Length: 613
Image (cartoon, rainbow, N blue to C red; front, side, top):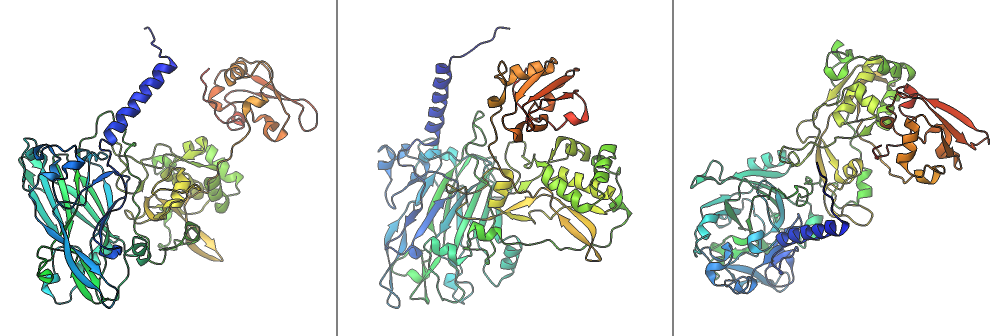
């Protein structure tokens, strides 16, 4: 078979073409931008409707009235994007002038178009079916139950349009489906269920509905930004009006297919003079109190992900969950000092909590038993060994399509037993728990796995980002700190050990995967290779061939005890190698013979050098 090679110029040219292709698809309209898009008059954001993309989506800001042809090449109406060709209705947005207690409300800002359009049909960044996208959304709030039937309206109004209805250049296209979604109000049974579900509402739009044989389903998650400090950061002022909640929402949308376009509106209220509720949008400006109407906010169109497109290029970050109110406004450093120890006590352990060999990952082996003996059967020493000596790997589980399972950190299956985890010096969260359970049980300490309820264990995103060595959520500053800390569900197990604490036997909870990590740049191997062995491959070949290798011990901390040789995988040949260390700390030469396959050779070597011999 004849091999083909490309020059560097050809490779960089192809790479440049690929980047050009990606950029062309990501943004096709020069007006596309990511920012907070607003509608309203005056300077007080409490009386504005706004939409802010949270996953770096770029959208096109639309004029309130008219066809918006100037934003799309001044094409005829029949050739404009779909949202320019739907049926229109006119609403009038709230405007407030004056200061409390002399504020006045007016409705002079007419609009018939959404505030912003997202998706490739508008020329913004593409949105892919099967992938979740989030938006911060505000258009007033709720008054709860104040006895005024005029204010008991549905909150969200979701409208779906069939894409195929726009392909023939049709105008004034009507919706294929429309669904009002009431949001929970404080003091109701729906509110209690809302709180129990992590302060979020999960809803499937058009569940079970088919339009011309196409499934309409779209997953919707709505979260409230309850902390006043965050609402004020967004410009929404507090009010003393009883039973009023300014609903700053985090709306997450995940379309099942690319067959439909989506439009989002909200019917909300604002408060003037601290005690007078006013609709944010009305249909009749002459009779505003009785004509509250949803304000069109944003539209989305989805497409199928190209087969060649990496799932990670456009994959949003993990989505955190709302912080408890006592945590809001604290810095990352302050939050890291917050401790919530697990103190759950189970019943006294039975015999099963001391058994090994009753599960595939807990098979007995003399190597592990010797480790327990060397540690003096001390459960504290064994736990410290797993925490400090076993590296965390395989910490994330992915679906078949490459997406992360749910919006949480999930561990996968068990690939290594306790023995393999120990020998490799690494393991997934559940594999590290398996090793610790084995060691504790062999030491005479009853131990068991503990699996939290789904999304029941939550960790600060900053801490998990450092543990996993990857940024999980949110933009970061130059120190790598997220600007808005949040909590991320972590569906990892831990280990509970039954030990004596101050004379009392009790369950102690141990999290072996919860590690402090630090990355330091070490010495450069090539600075210490002798003459004639200036590359790793040449040195390793001679080691495997049985040739003596001299290392200049100019810095004993890195050279001492022959730890600067090679990784275990590169010493597979059936030969012995004599290693000479020249000029050690005592000025004497020393030699050590290493035979591949011998136990001392397993971990007395330098880190893996990824060069094939």
